[in-house]
Image (cartoon, helix red, strand yellow):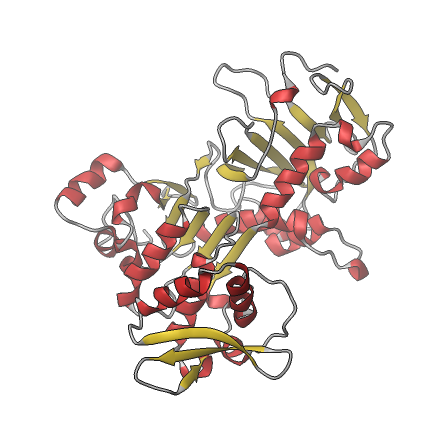
Length: 438
């Protein structure tokens, strides 16, 4: 099989940004026509509307590629991710098994002269007592506006357990053809297992276009980070004194490595310590300095100094909200932002007066990376009124599904011209914004 009309020399790649997500027959979310994502995305809607399910799709994608499987249980990274995802419960409840569940992730490069990528995955659920298996998997370029056929890096499971992968015709790497793949596992993503499949092939892995694009995709997805304020263990954060030596640059989901991340980022970026102190002064003007110090020989803790006092305070001396905001400050002001930052209910446990500051931190960080925030807080939403085009409401279809979509601009503009803010509209359940279940 030959590829015609494609100049592979033009396909260069850098870090990727998730631009669109399409789902089919998945739980209670109706986005078969696709949902476009911006650099900043604020998810709003009632409990049970699918915000967490949407975030779960992104977690699932990362888990399929990055999860550490439990070898003692004899399961793969994909199977582990499926279990975490919900196993048989991921099928739309209005659909009867056997059925397929479809996912399509579209990625844009950060520069216009690089190719756009689609990753398509279809799972098959034979029955409610069996786990989903991979029905088909495709990695390809996105069709252009002229309708040119996409370039396929690989396609697998048209015949279960087999597939094809594009390989260069010669060392010029300007033309390609398809080579057959055999023994393709159905319980592990081809994207994850293709290095082993190529090692068993008759052609070197570096002679395939997927060799480079896969590395770029995994680099981006490995840098996705997920936070839920309810998962942050404030007691453990306060008492944590992590060992010096680990190179952690990202806060863990529970926040317990806060002193270590703070210390590593201060060592990495000369200006980071000043940024953190300035950020916390917007909340506590009396803050003189926040710093990490050695606790014993090999451990770290955080000290907080206030103007007018020679006493040093520790995290145990600070309120819950203060500790939470320090965590968000470290996450959002870091010189090492994730490729995708997802934060669920960041407002939890915070004073309403701090919502403006938190919103500004989120907006500023979105200038450097892609961010998804799910919130129930009208106080926080008020401060995204100027970014209403980045807000996605989950709208009920009157039956069983919710569809995320942009706010109706014409309808919303009338309200904004009357000096309404988004949070106020959310509080009163205005149709333009929603906010109430039914």
